[in-house]
Image 1 (cartoon, rainbow, N blue to C red):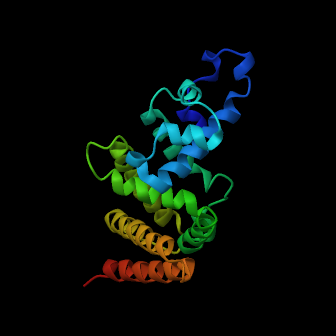
Image 2 (cartoon, rainbow, N blue to C red):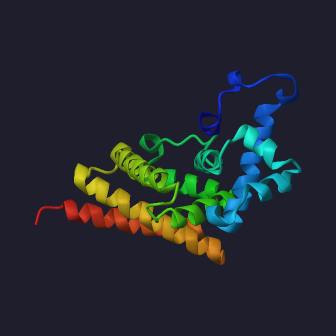
Length: 209
């Protein structure tokens, strides 16, 4: 959650900063737009401040470094799109759950673009978000494997479930990037069809030879 990445409210003075949570959110959202358009390297605190009509000093009162602001932006992008979705693969199955999340993601293209831009930059080990994305992909793959395990219609060995999870995540990212570049196809339909093919392949791999 965004609030987990922000400085503690109790440590701040009252009065002029009484609306701190609102200002923090404004800064995070402005930074998300700047980083999505220019990347982390090309984006600046000065541009973030300019976009919301405050000084760089004001931005740095809430986020003492660009790296801390980046962390808050990433947590915002990672959680905002699914904040109010009821996802239950045990109830709905893997494919329906994926479709619901993909449909919601399409409603937040700027957040998807932000993650796509920053994940590409963060492939460099020295990038400040490198470890964050390494951990995120581990968490996402583990989460997808959990969805596969929860689906009552699937019965895959743990190793096969993890391989399937990794392939679904890679497929999803690839189709999503193509859709961001040129949204002239039905992303959700193509994702669902491709996941169905991967699931069928995984099931056949479980059959005895």
